[in-house]
Image (cartoon, rainbow, N blue to C red; front, side):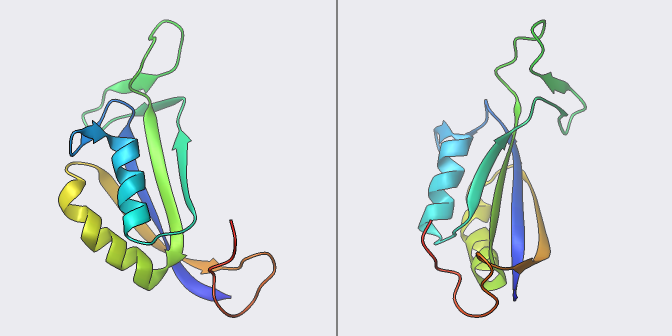
Length: 115
């Protein structure tokens, strides 16, 4: 196993970063920073920083659902990427925690396998 980190960025569908939709902008920043293993997850409901509920219910018809962007990579890459992204993230909440990385049963070596 290889020690790594998980970076999670919390945002909403309507958020914008550098004039682009936040999801698109953050994925571009992750790519430019050389991160691998990046996923976007759309929430069906969530509570924002100001306590307002964002919901996918038919009554709400929300286009402002919560999104999570999660990247798992080596700790060095995550730290470097976060340093590069921080000036662009504005009020997006981020969380980082340690993980153990294994690719397809691989126990040692490089994580730069094919997608």
